[in-house]
View (cartoon, rainbow, N blue to C red):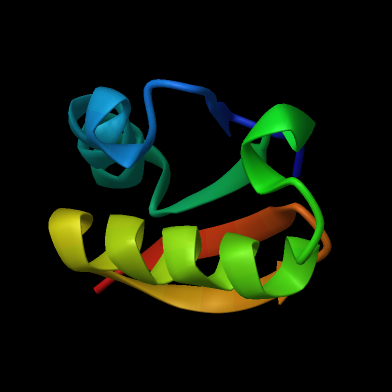
Length: 74
C-alpha cells in the first residue's frame, strides 16, 4: 500500500475530511508526517498525530513506524 495522505504544517485538521473520504472508500489508509513537523522525537510525535487523526475519523491505528502510520476504518 502506498502513502495516500501527508500531514504538513497545517496539521491534522487540514486532512480530516480527506482522511474520512479515503477511509470510506478504501477502509485502510497510509499517512506520512512531513519531517519539518516532527523536529526530533519522530515516533512519539507520529503516534500522537496518528491517535488524533484516528479519533477524528472514527478509525483505529494499525501501526506506526517512523513518520508513517496506517489507519483502518472501524
